[in-house]
Amino acid sequence: MSIDAAGLVGDVGRHVPAYSSALRPRPSDELAEWGGPALVLGKRVLDLGCGDGRFALGVAAFAANVEGLDPDEKGIAAAKKAARKAGARNVRFGVGAAQRLPHPDGAFDVVILSWTL
Amino acid sequence: MVHALREVHRVLAPGGILIDARPDSRVAAYAERRKRRGFQRFGVVNTSRRELTNDRASDCAIARAVHEGMFKRRRRGRFWHGVPFGSLAELRKYLWEHLRFVRRARWVVDEATRTRYANEPFVIRRAVRYEILERATR
Image 1 (cartoon, rainbow over the protein chains, first blue to last red):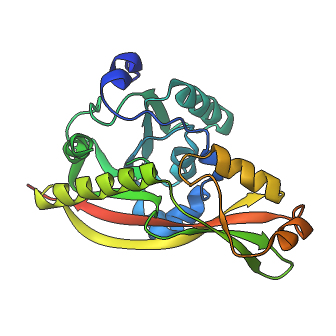
Image 2: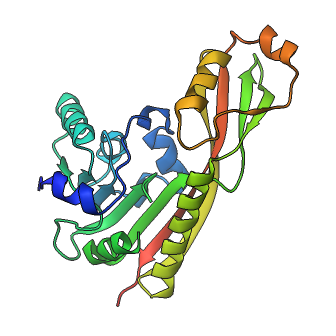
């Protein structure tokens, strides 16, 4: 699903590096505030603006599968590394922008814009 | 942003859920000293003008997507989140470098108090808001 980010970031979307993701609430805390794990349980989840994948990996234990997308190549590289380290098999990360999603219609049950819009 | 929401609408299955969560710039954040029990408020931290503008644009994009019938509002809420710092100097450095906030807090304690507790743990307590929207079936 990885697509060429250079062409996308230059003309659409606002590229915000994910350097501050460690200063955000823990994924479990945020999910609890939204209504708990039931919100993503067994669902196909897209985390738009996933940064270093912190949130996507945080909900992976509950979801059927999770895709993370972000225009920040460094963030995605860190996310892939973290996914390998965590042994998460149902998570994929790719570089891309929210304005041109490389997914078919109706591909997800839940889309998360966590600190993205 | 509306383009992104149109794409979200496209890739969501009918009845699917969109969760929009971000810092709540409509209320101030607070710089607080962590005490053995509770916190002592040291200052108020306002959101930068640029981020206020961005947040308003995001609100408008969501409102437009709802108005166009792409999504239905289901639920919204707000919670408070503390960003920890080891000292007042660390907190100030964060404010100076972080784009979301103005660069300096508006202190509500005097300088002597700030100096006295400068090496104690601090937090910036800020509001995070979220909204859960459902993809309209059309």
